[in-house]
Length: 379
Image (cartoon, rainbow, N blue to C red; front, side):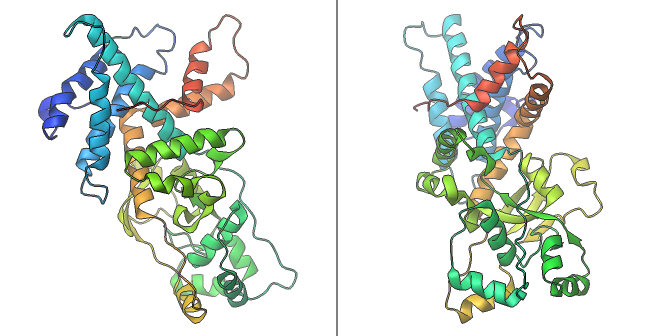
């Protein structure tokens, strides 16, 4: 977790500079919370204000993206609304305390939404269905392209992602182990390309597992809140329910990289040719780490088959959604929110039952903040 930079160290416009002292004041107030106070272990107040501060800073620093200043101005407006405290004397200690609380709450609002939309615990790997006669790779490709069905399940999403990506991890270029078993010609391609086979999974930019059971409504609200922040309100409906499996939201990814991606341990920056970025050097200490830059493309055989069948090419992962995920991942690490949610989940595993003396109440409170529905703050 990093402290917010001082006013002298930020390069905001006039609006940002005028509001930054209020954010620093709220951070200072959060730091004064006694370490022995119940709930201090998770430090929700400090996490909240740092999420808000680093969000504002990140949105300003990355305003060259196609989103421009839309998300930055949106957060500026919400921060300004937190400073209006009816019934309090201007400049009073009472007003400052109320402002601090509203700013911290706004930060927690964003923390809850970004964790719900992007932080995933993953799930079982949908297996390739084995056809008794094992049709050739070309036959399977042509059938999927001709049917031209939008993926609506985890299994169909995986099949469609594998087809679009040439049965390879989009980051390392390794061929999918199960597919190579089904279609031996892929082993020849792997040998020719000088790469190995690996277990892959279908990764989602906006989380799939966050939409299970009763969480669907919460997920929809969170997706809308995040997309509204970036000026993409109309896209929210396309990321709810079965729509989350559409081509623009999925990537074929080696299983260990998928785990790290779901846990916000790395993200992709730029557009179509991406920088693979992690805040921790040791994250990619593995036998076959991904390259520093990767370029996404539709498999050439799929391009040719789509042209032959007069079918539209499957969409590549959305640069806009990847940019939103990258921003939220950066903020989660700088603010300490990523580490906090990992700690909460570890403690929940070790605390299956609430303590009779209320000793685990702080854990429950933080967990509820992460999982419960939140009310949008108007600004």
